[in-house]
Image 1 (cartoon, one colour):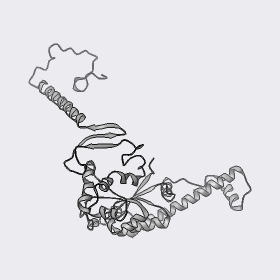
Image 2 (cartoon, one colour; image 1 turned 90 degrees about the horizontal axis):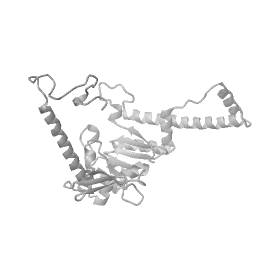
Image 3 (cartoon, helix red, strand yellow; image 1 turned 90 degrees about the vertical axis):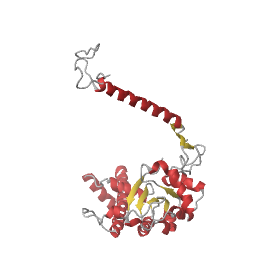
Image 4 (cartoon, one colour; image 1 turned 60 degrees about the vertical axis):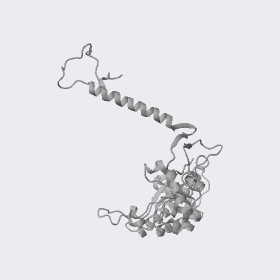
Length: 321
């Protein structure tokens, strides 16, 4: 039931002007803004053309009295299609109609403010600014035009664009009324988002309850699915985790996880699966050790009979078995 989204990007990831192999357009930050404005303008004109087409088509079908413009449409329609569907512009038009969120990769404050101005000009609301490492500088603007900001907890100085990033970023935006979540941008880090949330307590003095929301309820709000997930409430999906201790402690261990009320992980199941895997590994290793070597008699093993039409597959298993 979530509103669909579309990924935008700003900065060096887009222009790549320092890449000697790059020949893309645009190659400047100003060019990125111009490109976005140009495509949104084109999408707005496309949406209006589609509405005009549908209205005139309706008039054509019911054959009402027509104005000269409507008659010109009818004449053109009878000669062949006059509206060409464009899926790219359809998706962009959905942004303008508030039916699709923009989730925008962003770092620098000037680019964040640029997209805020574009959103205000075209009259739509941004879903999230993602990474948004200079969000603390322009938190008031983000609060006005975006559902929220999804940032790193403490990533900085890994390239020039992010030299002004600080670990208090999320806490400052939260203090200014921005809906803040922490993102991982990494498959391994995604397994430890509870510890990322703890950094907001350490660096920014955020309360433990609000810090947990950075990785639970707040991202659900940003995606528009908070009616279903994100907190433990009657009527929501039964998605929860049981910890051995405080969820923000790096000493705590996940003991059990439920998704939609069904156990997806437990320490007991994990131990049983590990034992099964160890047993199977030992069996396969022993089978390899017992296999005949080049020095052994290549003849058939005693008592073993292979029928002419019984094909052998992997590990000696009968094909089709």
